[in-house]
Length: 86
Image 1 (cartoon, rainbow, N blue to C red):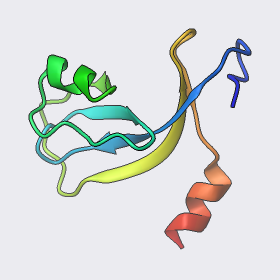
Image 2 (cartoon, rainbow, N blue to C red):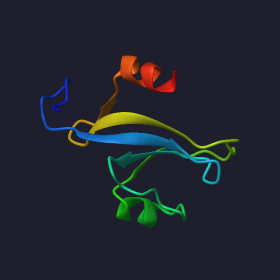
Image 3 (cartoon, one colour):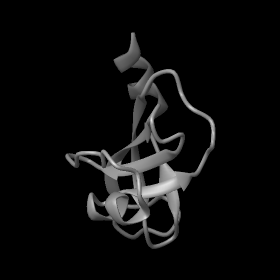
C-alpha cells in the first residue's frame, strides 16, 4: 500500500498499547513486540514508540495501522477494524 499523503510505500503493522510499558507503540506486520521496553529493543523488533506514557493500561490492545516512515503518517481502515471487533 502506498501512503495517501506522499505516495511512497507504507508498511502494514499494528499499534500496541501494552499494560506493562505504558507506551503506545507501532510494530510492523508479523513482528513480535519487545518484551523489555527500551528504545533499542523496540527498534530491534522494527517498532516505533508513538507515545511514551507513565500510566499503566489494564489490558493490551492492538489495531492494524499502516505507517509511512518517509512522511511520518499512520493510517488505518476503520471499517475493517469495527468488523473485526464484532
